[in-house]
Structures are given as C-alpha cells and as structure tokens.
Amino acid sequence: MQYHLVVCGGTFDLLHKGHVSFLKQILEKTDRVIIGITSDIYVSKFKNQQTEDFKTRERNIKDFLSIINAVKKVEIQKIDDIYGPLLDKSLNPDAVAVTPLTNRTAIGINEERKNLGLPKLEIIVIKMDLAEDGSTISSTRIRSGEINRDGRLYVRKSWLKNSLILPQDLRSSLQKPFGKVLDSVPSGLDPSKIITIGDVTTQKFNKEKVGQFLSIVDFQVNRRKMFDKLSELGFVEGIETIEANNPAGSITPQAFIAVQKAFKSSEKQAILIKGEEDLMVLPAVLCSPLGFEIYYGQPNQGLVEVKVTEENKEKIYDLVSQFTRTSFDKFSSTTKY
Image (cartoon, rainbow, N blue to C red; front, side, top):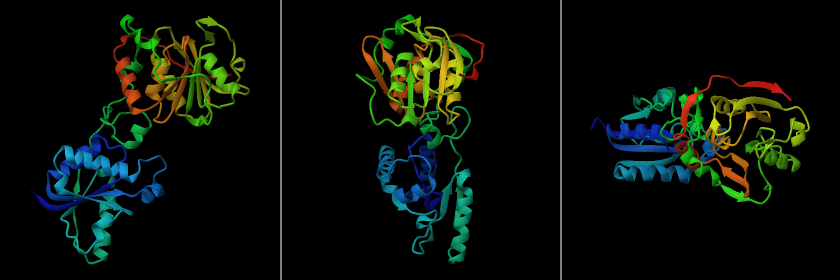
C-alpha cells in the first residue's frame, strides 16, 4: 500500500455514487482509514437544507464498508469541526484525502498543524465522479429531485426535445392510483411543498385555503370545458401563470419545462395546460424535490396523495421511459391572470 493511514471527512448525506467512489479510491491506497462524519450539531451550523441524522449517515457508511469487506480497515469518528482528529498529536497519519472542492480545507489544516508543530500531511485530491449531465453528483441535487444517487437525470434531455405519447399497453397502469386515496383534503399540510393537479382538486384545496405552491389545471372536468378563468377555481388574487401545450395522452417538452420553470420561483404559481393535464402527475413527480406532496383526482375513486420519494421518482421514471417519442417544437410562455 502507498500509505499506512489516511484521514478523510464529510457529511455523507444521502450516500451516493460520488461518496462511494471517493471512499473506494482512498481504500485502494492505504492500510487504514479514519472517516470523519460531521455531527448533527456541526451540520446545523452550515447546512441550510434538511440532512440525514448522524446515526443514519454512519449506518449507511458501515453498510457500504460491509458490502466491500473493508470494515476492519476503517475507523469512523464523529467530528465537530473541519479538523476532526487531524490535530491529535498522538495520531500519525500519512495524508488527508479531499476532493477538488475541499482542497482549500486541507491546506488550512496543514497550516494549523504547522502552528502546533505537527508534520505536514500529504494532500490526496480524489477526482469526483460526475452525473449524467457532466456536473457534480451531490446530495443537494438529489434532494432537489434533479438526479438520483447514481447521477442519472430524472428528466432525460431527449424529453425536453420530443413529446412522449402514452402507448396503448400502458394505459391500464395509469388507471391505478399512484398513491394513497383520500376522502378529503388533509389538514396540517406545508403549503410550500404542495402541488395540486386538476381543476376540481385545485378548487377543493383553494376552498380549504391551503395556499399550495403550484397548481396545474386545464379548465376542464372529465374532458369538458367547465371554467374560463382562475378566479373560478378559487384563486382570489393575481398569480403568475405558466402556459403549456399538452395534448391528451401525451407529455410534451412544454409540460416538463413548465414544471421546471415553476421551481425556479419562490412565488405561488399555476400552470395552465392548453390540451389536457391527464398525465401531468408524471412530470410533476419527476421534476419535484424530495419531500413534496402531489394531489390529483382519480376518476371514480377520489383524491390521490403522491409523496415525492426516491422510490416513487424511480417508478415514474421507469414508466415514462416506456412512452413513445415524437416531435414537438413549440415553447411555453409566462403571463399574469
């Protein structure tokens, strides 16, 4: 082995392909590794988003090490600062392993070691695995619903260029609810993480004054035009609206782009579909961040609640991947209603 002891550290939230590659490359170079995992208290000081708790992150690392038979080579420590065990005079590591993004941290650690009379550590810079689009794989991107833990995009680039047509043999799959069927609008919802699809569903949520982040409507009920303006659905003031063409039985590039565009704003919005919103639950799940909840009406069954989880995003991705591609070359627009 090239080294006797290497130290590395991180949050390791939503353990993903990038983390796994990072740790594997370190393990290939050394006899022993100390992995510092940031404590919950430390994470709360610099992370603005939700993060898995320490025990979960530690367990995921241990499970990974067990799979590759590396448990005996590794010591896991909880760390409360950027230094971890690297200022411990009784410890004699050969190197500290970092990514290009954390290289400056390692330089700072060596400066502090110098101040304490400790020898300089070699800095091993591990190349980062990239996602399908060539950008970094990160827990932030996974939580935002953009990629999965392997770095695969939930919305293929080709889906933003070509319309997708629902094949006949998949129609029965869409007749089953994608989630739990409810009798009424649930209470205690976080409006900033709620999406409603369908005019009747949206009208019900507005009647209950939920204040959902996003509504997707087409002014139709059972494919018959029933409304002419958003105020008829219970919207009491001006709302930014994104228009998108989306014929029945299809998902157009406009549909995906409209939902993606909505998430670029913090304002409450409505997507007005010209055509039908019958399949809009699919792009809504694929484009939404983890933790969102989507509500739509299932004919003859009731209100369906779909929680945006990694599992549900994968199921929807697999389903949409079976759609037939065709061309579609119009673009969405934004207006005020």
